[in-house]
Image (tube, rainbow, N blue to C red; front, side):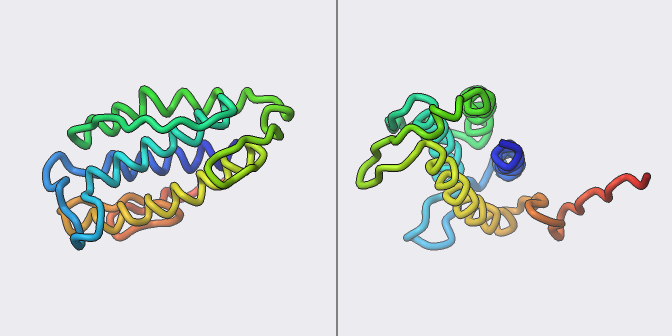
Length: 153
């Protein structure tokens, strides 16, 4: 749970960094636009967390028109799910959930979510500088944001 909460907070930093303009940017025609990618990240996190909570997966594509809409969706819809996952019992986390070709314990989908999230968050962070935004620190400092030093004892 601590890693899930930390990754969630880091993802929010990257989503917040998407500027209100230039969100139609694509590095190539094969790529999602900045807004499409940000929406995918937020929606997929909700998808995985709700699936684990409910014991079944159901995709619902949110209609998000701006980067601010994505952050509001993330705060209002996805953030509360972190606490709900933390309250799941060991039995609920061990319950096997069928999804597409997969049949895994619920907890395995949390791990898949973390990998999926880190992959797409990395993509989105690579979009930020070309659209004039600053890249937040993710696992260490970025050229735009230093990591605060730990307090000395």
